[in-house]
Image 1 (cartoon, rainbow, N blue to C red):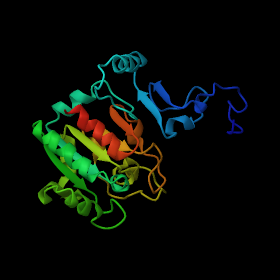
Image 2 (cartoon, rainbow, N blue to C red):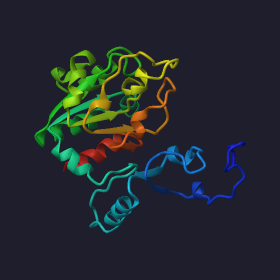
Image 3 (tube, rainbow, N blue to C red):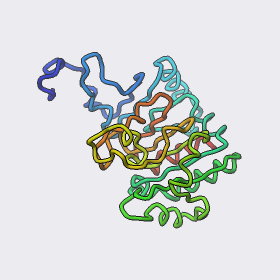
Image 4 (cartoon, rainbow, N blue to C red):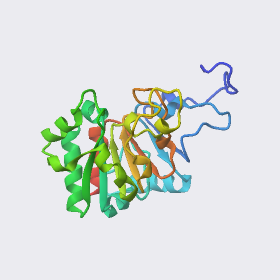
Length: 246
């Protein structure tokens, strides 16, 4: 309806965008055959479920037939092995960002860390020096949530450990984990040191949407195979992760 000059401009479409709620089971976030980005993918409230359609539709069937009162994940591009991934991780690195501050989710993040540790995982927090909107922003918020100081580890100290960690969990961070900083010449983040989330064996990213961060540079982690995107308010998506560990 709006993208003049593209192959689909003026083509009649099904008005999915007018539905009260929508779940989209697609293999990935790439554009369709016409090569035109779909704004539905980042519309608030739309639930993206990525992967093979047979698996994601089975997941919908499982949720629809779950016993009353059983927790179900919402606003998540879900993954059939998410619970197993959380339960089996023995080394976890949590990466907080400005989105955690906006959602005031630091208490939930502490609860998540406690659950993971109770399950046998070693949990550390990777703190990027410019995460948030002021120096030490993440440290202050996590200290408010009583996260032990020794678990708040600086980028230089922890960056070499991402390759050995079973699971990296990002809470509202984008630019500080964006591997485009290593390749996207001419962008505001090119050459900026980043946290090496892309080297982790598995990653869960709890971000409000799929939009680029403050620097306006697309993050290739969002479409990297095996990365689980959980979209929406961080307090809610982190609670979903906590529920998977109960």
